[in-house]
Image (tube, rainbow, N blue to C red; front, side, top):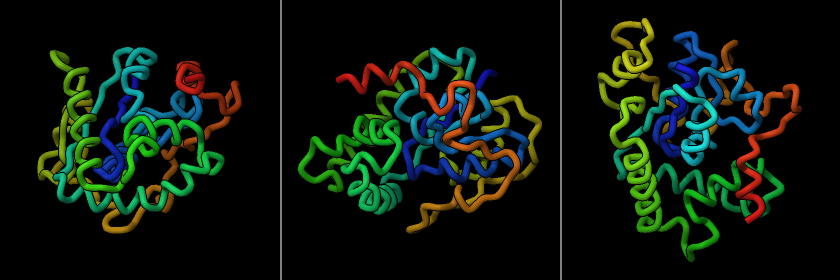
Length: 214
């Protein structure tokens, strides 16, 4: 295995799975905005993975992908809460990394809909993403689908990555309710900085130039 990419949408358990992987010895980046972050990490989640998995698949052959499902009735209030906080900053563009801005715009069409926080719009975004992932990985065996709330989901993940993991373990439940800083609050030597500085400073992958030129 080259890398492990967690390609579930935000608020589907990405922080929980990242925290569990840290304790299993994986070097983990929850979001990655520089090429060097991808070099350093064994597992990468959230932005840009849920959006850029086809490009990452080409850049890191023999990687594995984990799609996170969540009950839509639980996901909706959680994603609405997070987007309501992010949208004012995303619209200013200068506030966040351009990769984050691009991925949210591509996935949630924030500037293309009258009410990006409506249930109808967000359900459509969730279903569109789910269908795109299913089509892309059809007939492949390098993608796992789990719900971190399921009792056997941790064991299924460990088996999928061929790791001799902890027995009878489950995922921690982080970033519940209105919490959004679960990953930031974790102190662990295996955490990888999202903006890790490397030989090319904080340069991202060249494929993003195509998106920025449109």
